[in-house]
Image (cartoon, rainbow, N blue to C red; front, top):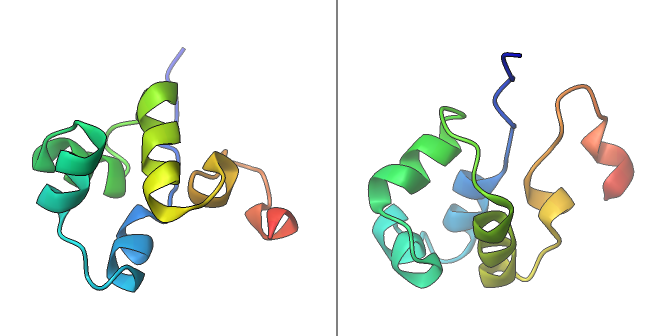
Length: 77
């Protein structure tokens, strides 16, 4: 069953975190810069472990960063 990309706010949060680079975020969560780029572009859905590590860097809950398709993520804010 094909899956839709999971929309996310990773790029926005990096920008708000003093314009953190993809490489810096990748280093902090144990992923490559290319993987961070793919997550931001919706071409790759992170593992649950990676999603939690990304959320921890930004001090957010996973559902505040990653938005299940069809779910109104505004209700979580």
